Image 1: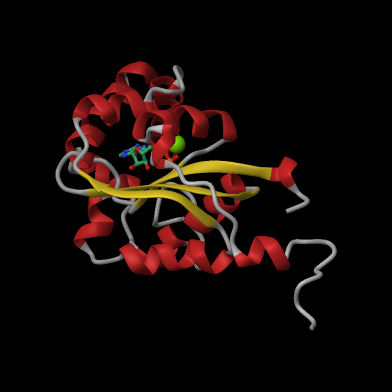
Image 2: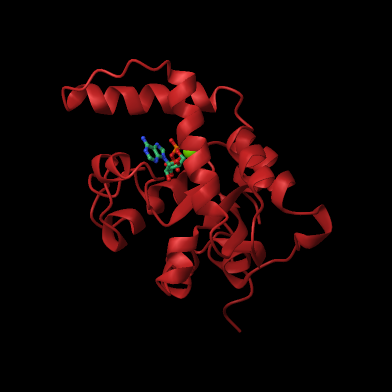
Length: 201
Ligand code: ADP
Ligand code: MG
């Protein structure tokens, strides 16, 4: 493949709600359809420690997620007294509870522009407002408001790395390097090759 400089890896987790709703195949189909490649896939039951490590690979995650939550509340006319870090900590503990409640599927997806492409397919965090056509927009209808009133993590089926740097750190948490297989697909060999040589006989 000639476009090696664009190849990157991203970490995707199908959260317990995706497994409970029998959506593994439906979701994986979307990534496969785009022509992305799986370097590793496994079904596991995560521990709270792993969930905390995963979400805090970005040391500012508590703060930024807390700020985002406070802004959402403000739009509803509710001013939260708590500091962003504290709000983030509460979200983290509900995520731990949710993410350890049942099996999840963890996978590494590889390809040119894999990180933004997967985020585009997955859609925005809140299913209520994520676009139609995205996985979160099409298969689930949870909202910040509903999640907040029940003090639970928003159900949005999937985690996907937000940038290449955090993807590298997240992958190291969930996979050993030997679990990630290196191989070439037919798409890479023919479709994205600028000089396809092996089609015509
Ligand atoms: P994303 O998964 O889209 O990257 P974030 O990194 O901001 O979103 O948050 C991680 C996860 O935490 C979300 O997917 C969601 O399940 C949960 N979450 C985020 N913000 C809230 C919130 N305000 N209330 C409940 N759950 C939240
Ligand atoms: Mg995120």
